[in-house]
Image (cartoon, rainbow, N blue to C red; front, side):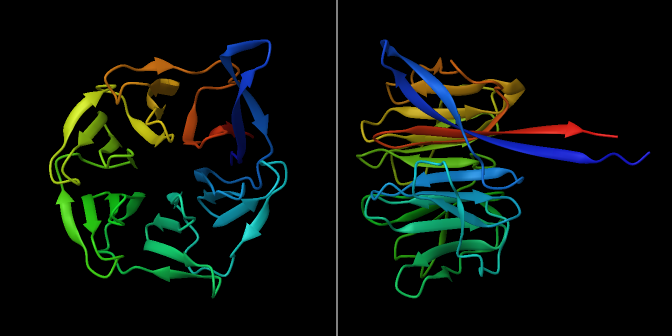
Length: 261
């Protein structure tokens, strides 16, 4: 008998409880489409952008209550990660490569990275683009004009973040890794043995990790990866797929797959 798979996507936002200021509680937001949410970012003007596995990019201007198609004319549909810098440069990556959005032409520009199946991207204070892929980590020091292999000893780099002083962190198949030399070498620093789907960092260098392994949910480190604590109060399900954080909000999405008859 043919089974139909229904995919429900939920997006949550983390607030401080006003009655208990030290308690952080997740609240559910609306999702734009029945498609896996693969990345979330928020610009300085308050707009949220999210990437999806089948429908490209969506935008919200009201903290995630309503979502609209964003730049649907793009030739690539599967988005693995969407990323923005402090000055609102917007990037997306996936199986088709790495792209940067041109605000003047309202088009995505292919940065011609090596074909490697990209799953994450980050930009440091020097403007160097570092990208994680199925074949290791690649780096461009000239705005995407040329690329070089930065490291291959991390395995699949599911997600990358950069601290305020350009320390790189990568969430991979077996934990969290750190690099202090622009990605040339990496050392494991935490969540050993866990599959890390996504990580993000706030402006005070507090790290947040989405641990897909056995539905562990969201973890936080306040000392650059040395120690981690779970942050799951209010989650209806801990099978989460991505996490994003800025000065005001922490957001994450989860995917539930329910088989029908």
